[in-house]
Length: 247
Image (cartoon, rainbow, N blue to C red; front, side, top):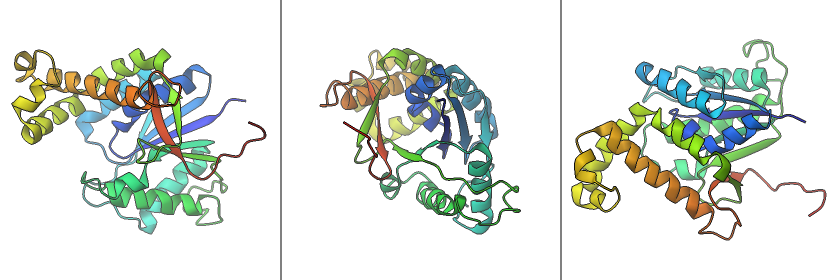
């Protein structure tokens, strides 16, 4: 039976980071949705383009403000309405454990907001304020890029598609290049990127080279370099034990 998948991204690039998994679900005929908490207007067309490459037909932008995310009632209403309207079987979101020591702005409070909203989505909390939709229980919650994964998805067959979506994310690529040049310096980055000196002054090209290396390294770390029996993989932590009818 087809499933409904919702990827809840804090900044938007997370859609690409779990792009292999999203593409597999889209190819299987599942309804795949994405929503973004924080996004700069000029980055939105790129986020939408990357999502379409992966088979995600539309992205909702929730219009939260940078540096102002709070788990307050108004914010919870936005998310609860989204969850009840889309009614996903599977929700993918950031790992709250990882978010606690992530110094990207808003990640810690965004993680708390997500969990607070989830806690009332299946209860009779503010039905009218949340659009009149019935309460909904999300069957499976998966945290992306977790500190302690307990499952992986083999993405080898769609890894090239994920790389195409990466190429479309020029705003993020340029930002990463600028940040990593400042943080790590030229000498370190020369060991990571081939022909670094010819790419150094083009932030988009350098960012693409860096992210290509990082995404492949991450996929191999959870795949061929692990005991998962996968080649290239995306890792997740499922919320709670997974119920099996048999092994």
